[in-house]
Every structure is written in C-alpha cells, then in structure tokens.
Image (tube, rainbow, N blue to C red; front, side, top):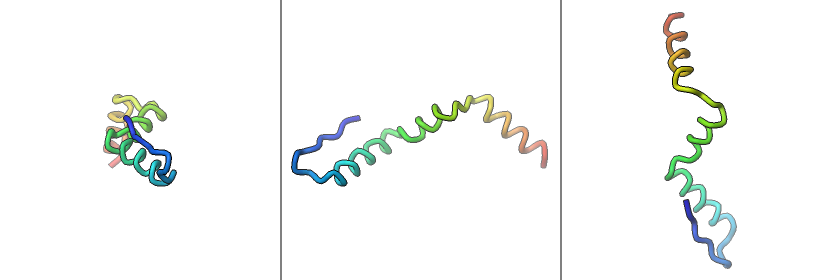
Length: 54
C-alpha cells in the first residue's frame, strides 16, 4: 500500500487518500479478523449453535 503525499497537500486529503487505498486492499476487515482471532471452526460452531436453537 502506497500513497504519495506532497508538501502542499492538506492533511485531510492525504488521510482520505490513505483510507481509500486501505479499503481498496481490504485491510480493515483483515485487521478485524486478526484482532478478534476468529478461527474458521468457531464461525461454524456459532452457525450450528444458532440453527440448533431454532
């Protein structure tokens, strides 16, 4: 991920460019996956638990 920022560019515009680039590379969802450490088996268990109650 790379964003080129010039000296005379406002900080708001530079941050907007950085956020757009991060969303394009799907970085926020990857960070959420790593932060909560959700393993594939855990999501499957939650799905089965939900549907077994109904």
